[in-house]
Image 1: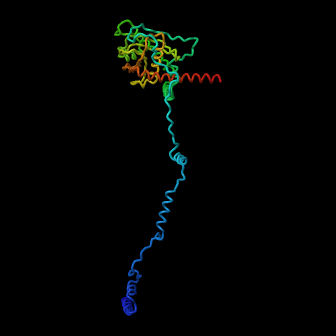
Image 2: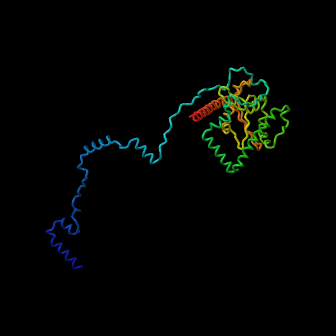
Image 3: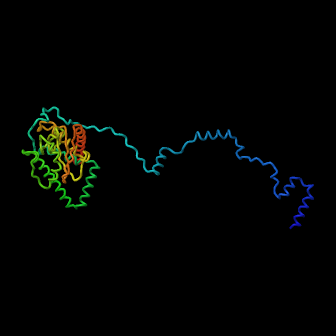
Length: 345
């Protein structure tokens, strides 16, 4: 190996005169001589492009580009991705009553609400010549909203599931009987001639209810009517008011209610405020009563004797519910007309 290396060295030296420096360097390294040459400048493949012409072309394309999509195709695509688009309904104009009627009949000559009058109790007598005058209760039952009907039906189904069909019928009958006993006990208390502090004999079934309303009865004075019929001769409906009396200095139509659940606010009483407003309007138009009422009171009693919730309705509130009641009345009358039309067709 050493002999071969010396031979190569001698051969190289022998040819030194005929080989140029660059070739000698290449020979020594055994590689390309490019290391001794200056680096060639890398040429871009875009260098031959007319940049000014290209920029103008790009600007022209971008400025004139249009989308192939339309509002319809975009809406369709969104429907596939996110579901059907729910468009907001156009705002509706406020409803107006066809035949609005005033709550107060100012044309009648009346006594002052603070003037003492005899207690009235008029029994409900249907006019055989005009038997179609509906009651307040029937009107409200036949114009319930879908949500009211849903919750009422759900409550009924739960009770039937709990008690069975026969048990539910018995339960409903007991509620009706307790309601009658409760109103009779209140009537006995309010019409007695003895001192209100004396105890009144009441059935055990309703003793808890009377205990519940005890603090309310203390503020009820000057009873004008109890379980008395009223009829609105202009709007054509009738009803029976539970009580008309002074409550904390204001003459009110009072409605006594019982409930298994607490009802701490007026909103919890559902259609009861409309019922009271309807009674007030009917009483004010009825010639059997020589006074006008502007306020209402809803008293919710509880069987366990816990304090009743009393909801006072001011004149302003009564007027609001009076308008709502007239809408319900118009709705009922429209249904009656539609039903009669359907039967004759």
